[in-house]
Length: 207
Image (cartoon, rainbow, N blue to C red; front, side):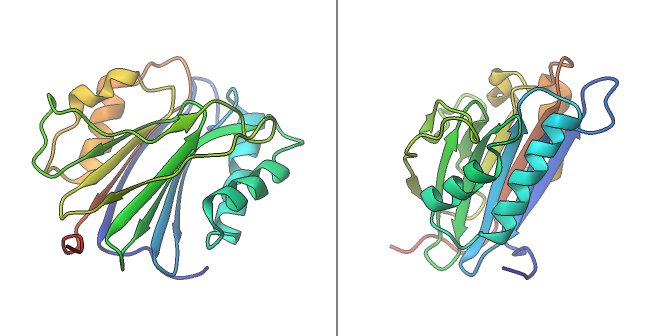
């Protein structure tokens, strides 16, 4: 689907390629949909050109088939990546009419859901992420749904970011500033690294 990214979904991206590489295998996708938008963080296996090729191939399918339901969408990506290194990814669908978010993942792209007003000591929700590699062994994914309130945010990071990045999550700061903070504080420096933040600025969830 063509169209602009919804203004009520504030986004921030911070990325760094592996030292010595000109392309990163970590890629963020922001694909507008009829109900809102799809956010995906893709990590092509390894780093360098072959990893970047896999991530870019996955991104193309996500944009082209963004209206597909989750499992058929991932199956389409899986078929496209069969002759690549493959990739892991976590996806979040924002439904602005329902004021809800659905999410799922395959492999080790970490994600946290932050309620407005949460602090670093809060327990953040995470999606059900199953083992596998898109392009090699695709599981039957499990999609969970969370109602959205103004200021809620999703934070996603590839494995080039240390898994303790929750310590740097803070409610109420701009999405771009938060993404940059997470990468600066928790980037490992040994792999491609990507941090993505999407914050919902719209009306409250339906009662």
